[in-house]
Length: 175
Image (cartoon, rainbow, N blue to C red; front, side, top):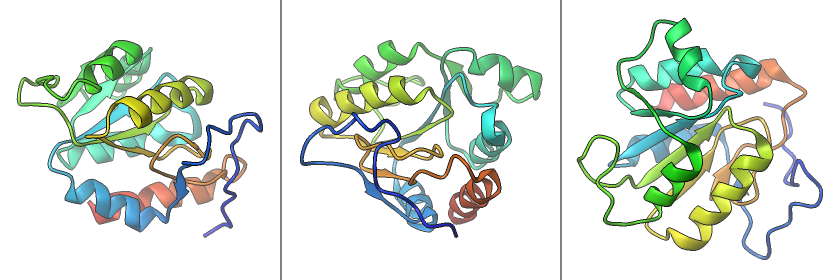
């Protein structure tokens, strides 16, 4: 595995003393597996870095998917819509911050959210909201960028696509 850097992709994104931990993919996979109600949140960059196929593999393991931005188009192009719901990212995060929210399926709020394929600066902001206003949620980021507002995150590996895809495979292998 490549050496992972624990510094924000955007050098000015230092949110304070509590910053995300660069975590091994196997550990992130085990965290997702242990979650009672995980939710994979896919953004408009889901086709970048080959993430769409990995998101579909995660969905096939039974983890519900919230497609934000134009990610729903990517899932439809691939012919996978089984457990995919469309949501506006900011509205979804506002709902996630409410512990009484019933979830996209009406079965209750989620305990773990996993972000993949979203714009870096957009996810940074919504992860900040989750970190500060949703103590009932664990927020994980499996993008190829270090996200300082996530509880656990991959390091900066955006220049090494093969290593990134191998890390996603390791996460999927633990589910």
